[in-house]
Image (cartoon, rainbow over all chains, first blue to last red; front, side, top):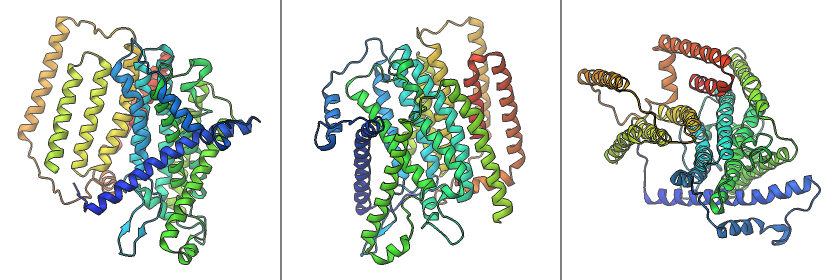
Length: 356
Length: 179
């Protein structure tokens, strides 16, 4: 195994980076719950949370506090260990994906030290994301089964089959993208999308793989269990879904993991398709300001894009009605997978005969 | 560091593999099996085969074991008592397992263990793997794809007869094929 150059400065740097990213994703997820309510309220011509603090900004804190002080109930007939493991796994997998996202360009200090704004640049970054995402369904499955409740079980089965069906189309749409980039490392994929216009065509992958982006986006909706694909928690059919028996902070973990997933997958979509931290005229900006300021601008650009993506997810949720389960499966297996395969073949043909 | 990791992963793999066959509850067996896959992926990482490690997790832990768990959960709804097999079936199982064990033992006895170069860190990279697969081993690779194709067709045929299980059958075969 290749052992990296590990010294104290390196460890401190990474610990700080990891804490900032973890706290950041928790914070964004916290305010995503607030934003979701506000978006829903605005779209339904209501006011939304406005009691706790200005514009209801302290509402997430109040919610968290409420969940902490609720009584903790573990059902008598449940499988105790797995019942506790479920929300833990959901939270763990939600937090793990952010390690491979490059949050900004490398920052070179005046002492010549290069600080990377990515926790780990592994050369199979996108496959790591896939691995963690494919494990994410265990939290829901185990929790649903261990509750010993028929509705929870049905919900967890729905979640598992939905996740597996849509992972396929997602993987195939990514293969087409990876044929263009020729690299599995997220850092390489971002640096290939430098700037906005390379003289011939846009550099961002969304302009090179529009169909792939749409397929990937639809599959992300399904993987995130968000409307219009929120079948696992369809309250009109399954009461509450897999977290029906959960109370207190365990329920909070499930709900919260969903919003962390929303944040991280928006970051992944932005990184893969919308240029990551790159923005138009970034070379001119880099020439004009100090390196530190440039890095901050890049991170802010990435965060702005991510927040726009999250808002898009929310607009869709409050616009479209929920799919029926057979419609969901038909869309996944009979539309998205063939479409993704055709997209892959066309991309391969174009690379082989047009670009070479 | 390397030694510690190796022994940790080895003990974890063997312990979890024993847990698979010793636990009474099938769901626990599946969970132990998932843990075993993680330990094996760790071993792949120690051997510099990152691609293999991550694909092992995606395909086995992420897709196939989800389907296993899926089936176990449906079958295990009411009781976790396993049905008693007849003596004959137990004997047949013992003989079959013992023969497999002997074959593995014989293969291990004659195998020559090549030493891994710990300094080289690119043998498991996806680029080298792809080159080897599509040049040196292209024929076995294509033949295995035909095998998967026949498995897909088989799954479709089965699911035609039993509409209820169609999602499970389709999912398992197609997943292993694509990845």
